[in-house]
Length: 213
Image 1 (cartoon, rainbow, N blue to C red):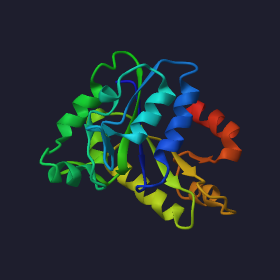
Image 2 (image 1 turned 180 degrees about the vertical axis):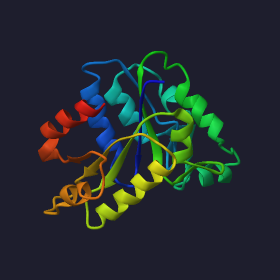
Image 3 (image 1 turned 120 degrees about the horizontal axis):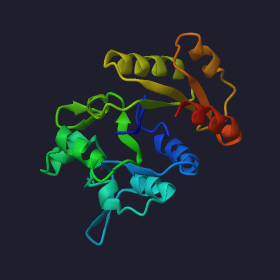
């Protein structure tokens, strides 16, 4: 399967924001489908789950696929997919997520977003890293650009490398303006490409990400 799996050093690091921008750029040159196989903390409207992140990804992709294909497993509880599925008495297995990611993708480039960080539980006794391994796809690691980002990034890189995952790059996501030099500091400790993302650095970001994907 041709594509990329995006994960993070933790939850709430801006994976979806970064993913949307990458997808909008990539779709100009290739056909893309997206998969966000599971999402929690979903609002329920008229009996239907509303997976907000999956909807944003699908809109950015503009593939015309239904949201049920993009995100087939939705839960209302704000928790890990593992816990949310167990609480809902609808246990989610790793094989379910693998099938969801592979369904109907054909020869398209597949952009898959996990849930939480690389070691966050995503299914029954399974982590995001387990899903990435099963899919056999290279990964992008998103890290919030803040104090402590270097340590968080190195831990995530080490986790990925310990599972022999191919890392495309680390994206330092500047969610709030700062004057930190995390990119330079992190690059001194790893050979993994490090790219900065912020609203003010999009041009450079797009040039670099297109070289890598």
